[in-house]
Image: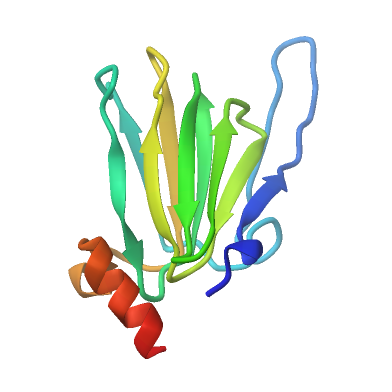
Length: 136
């Protein structure tokens, strides 16, 4: 896969004096049907999350509160994205190594996923991930 397929998606933002609203519809705002939602919170300062790639899973990563960085790597190129707005989502396609770091205090990271949890979909070892890319 090519890291160029990943990137920021602008989500709808309805502004109102009583508070703003953003919504996400699978197949419309994200290029997949949403089958799972999970979120990370209370991440200690200096901690890193992620450190894996998925064989088939697609994801949209959103900073619901606070901020954090997502580092994507396709075996050739690395890109860092700073997420700090709840109306932006980072689309991550399959076969991209991802790491999350630089969490601000009180940050909440929400992830929308294209499939249910499946441990067999993971590469948790970077060298094995690179070997799978080379095998194509």
